[in-house]
Amino acid sequence: MAQLRITQLKSEIGTKPDQKATLKALGLHKIRHVVIQNDSPQIRGMIKKVLHLVAVEEAK
Image (tube, rainbow, N blue to C red; front, side, top):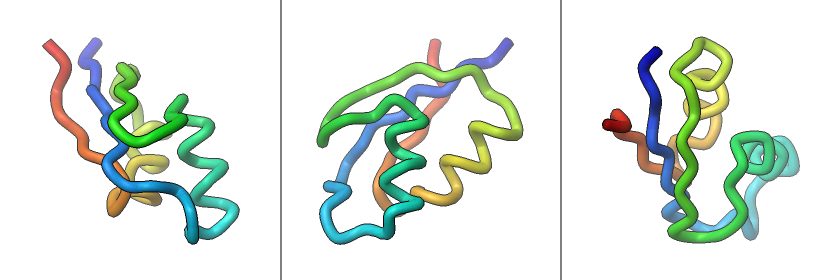
């Protein structure tokens, strides 16, 4: 199964509560924090919601 490397680039300060909850659900806590998630439609939907705060690339 393909995996995605998600890096938080911007702070969650000033964002909507649902976006903060999405970052927490992805496992991100602070700027430059990196998590590896399995590629699925659910994860893609969460990434789409906070795309302006994160960077996404294929994990090797």
